[in-house]
Image 1 (tube, rainbow, N blue to C red):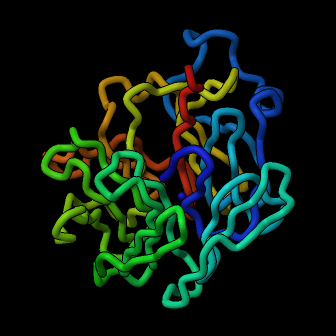
Image 2 (image 1 turned 180 degrees about the vertical axis):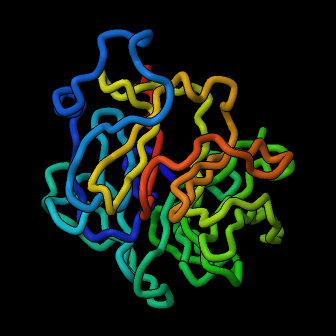
Image 3 (image 1 turned 30 degrees about the vertical axis):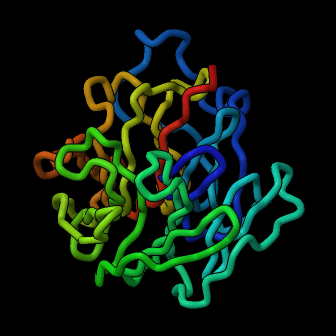
Length: 278
């Protein structure tokens, strides 16, 4: 796992960076959008990818090994802040009550949760963490949860709420930022997390990809072009870990199919490439 600039929402231990120029060399993309096939295609191959996040200049992929990049990562009870070259990794915050793995992390870029960091415990608890490192538990979904993302204000009845997915119950839940009441947004089998389609969808350099999905057991990263998301801006995607299909919802109705199966289990983290500033 979401996921704004400088952040990974993943349970993995280590991170590798795929730079735009390197990615272009790996995939040898077509020279024009017209030549690109609509739908998923392979962006890169690498050993056991378990999650994806993007910055303005690089795609960050967590694996079981390889050097760390500039990113916040939650590992067991600790949140680490790492520098761009992989050195000087430091513990930003430790939350002793967190579970021993598969915890989620994201930033609130909407503002409804105070623009704070948000941590999800796979067992159900949800925490906010301020820039000064003050951690507060705000809710407990009482279900397995992963892949948090704060919905935009336009997301139907759940605008501004925190969305989390449960692969075991096959549901996406919403947490109100004021009352912390928990609602069900909809259902999607083996939902691994939630990704919000950005208002403007941009592609990663010359790769032809705008949305990237880690397929752990296939040792590859799958990408979708920007054209696939025309008309879906502000909606929520729910990738299925076991089904490897992806659902989409506008917050007013249940999840429907955005993409059928894209491979063999397990599908892990996913993220959109952010549009360059300016």
